[in-house]
Image (cartoon, rainbow, N blue to C red):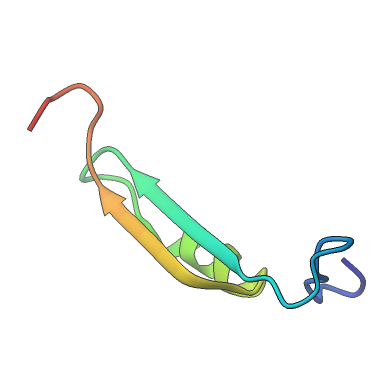
Amino acid sequence: MLNGTPSPLPGHAGTRRIGYARVSTVDQDLAPQLDVLRAKGCDPIYSEHASGKQAD
């Protein structure tokens, strides 16, 4: 990465960056993670609000 611009992986021209953001409590905010993933050129971005403590 040069000057904050995402660069493709070597030998993988034309590939996509897929983002994933996750928080596990209601007090946490997805926004900072989503901002970083967008800045890194991720598209699509998947996100969830889930706890690993509960099965449901």
